[in-house]
Amino acid sequence: MHRRGFFAALLGGAALLALAGRAQQPERMRRVGVLIAFPDSHPFAQAFTATFRDALRRLGWVEGRNIRIDYRFAAGDPALFKAYAAELVGLTPDAILASTAPALAALQQQTRTIPIVFVVVPDPVGRGLVTSLARPGGNITGFASYDASIIGKWVQLLKQAVPEVTRASIIFNPDTALAPPLDRVIEASPSVGVTATLAPVHDDAGIEEAIAAQARQPGGGLVILPDSFNVTHSNAILAAAIRYKLPSIGFNEVVRAGGLMSYWFDNVELHAEAASYIDRILKGASPADLPVQYPVKYSLIINLKTAKALGLTVPPSMLDLADEVIE
Image 1: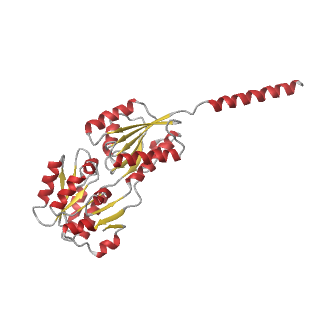
Image 2: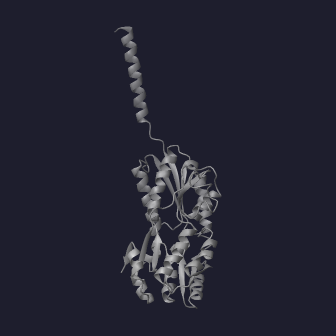
Image 3: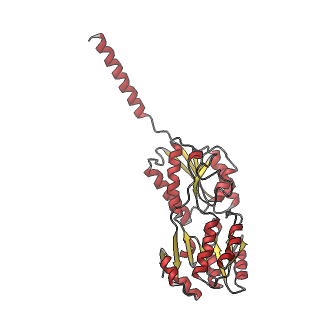
């Protein structure tokens, strides 16, 4: 063999061996933490995690092959949020998904360096969580849920559906809601003929007391803020609302569980959107450069079964606006 041919063959063989060795190397295992506000048995928790996992799989991230996902379920307990946030940060993951505001708040206390993608968090700019929507800065970005303008819209829609409403009590748990500042809602509500007041609650007894107080005078209604406490206590809230004949507006699960109406988005789908940001971060993107996004589609749902139970007739003009009517 000529010397030139010999060296060419030798180099070609070395290149093939290098390629073969590279092909045999296992894919690097990435690690992602997930902090969910609900118990693992709750339908929300199951839907959120399944949607997130499926979206990652579509992007090429398969559990056990190239990604490990560590789930923690705080069940709406502030102590568990804190403990599980510390646990997840201690695992030094490549990124963390924070589902709801309490999850994000707990994780913020534990790390300012690990990338965090949030979902279902209200008014992140107004609450100082990010610098701006376009350039959030720091280690946090994600998908916001609502700001004060949406709650103002709820008050307006409740008045349109039930013109008799002149007072709206905003039901929330201050430990878990982490709502945007509602001063503007309270100040603006009289312009649509409604006086809005805050009704902080912490347990079923507090729910009963707040709703009973709202029913002592005519013209009462309820605005049920979206938070993990109100979700897990929705049966108590809505049972009292029906018992005291108070119309209510809230997120989609409220109207499906017996509330009068909702104006909300698909919060399960937000977890699929979050997977796209986790994917980009795992591929080298910085959360500081990924814009915070709000939902682009809200749906109005009206429950006529509840209207009948409350002895109400919803104006036809409102029914024409509805995306869905439960009969």
